Image 1 (cartoon, helix red, strand yellow):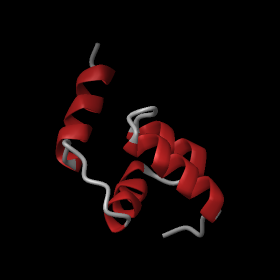
Image 2 (cartoon, rainbow, N blue to C red):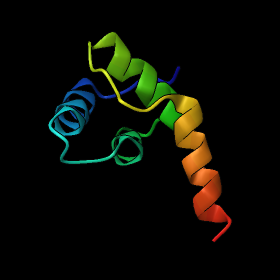
Image 3 (cartoon, rainbow, N blue to C red):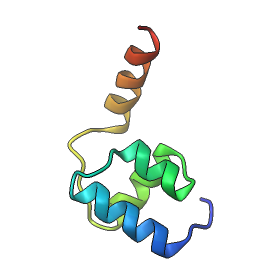
Image 4 (cartoon, rainbow, N blue to C red):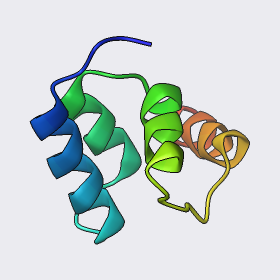
Length: 65
């Protein structure tokens, strides 16, 4: 996993936890992939209602439009 700025990571995860930003927006802010930010969120005790596979399915559906 890439090294991240802890202040940016904390802010992004806090905003994600509060529902202010999406997981992919949090990933962009911190400079990580969605998979990496999901792992970070999980390690910080943040539960998501969406699995990685569900996220990928949603992205595939959007790109097919």
